[in-house]
Length: 187
Image (cartoon, rainbow, N blue to C red; front, side, top):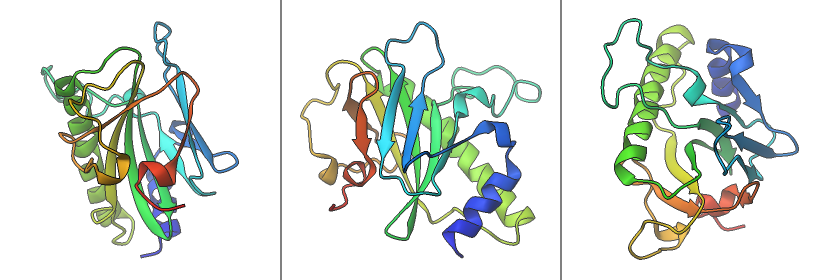
């Protein structure tokens, strides 16, 4: 399936006001919490068709049907969809103003993982068999301060493809990060 067709199918399922499009091949991920000191990061060289949803504002799965639970209603800040070298990627992103806790962000990313499973089911059932099931998904925490990882490894050798295996990236407010580098791709 063509990636652009799947991007269009995803957008057709979501409210347009929930979708943030790229500008000049950049995605600007913003934290809306007024108390946050890390307010934004920029992902550069994401391609012309990249977009993201401000996932923590979507209230998925919602408390209308599901009872309150410790981690069921936790959400990361953003889920981005992009294409690099004709390969689709999903990036789950969390911004933290303080040193993050692995357990907390794992809960937030598990919520994103569940949403992506549900989105894939919707695509498959309502959008002529489109799917994101085989798309590579990466998990990133951009945070102020030092990394909680005992020994820092380079992006290229880190496997951040599950909610429990997250890449922590120390950053400053408004910093720019190149997508190819985050994905461990040569320039």
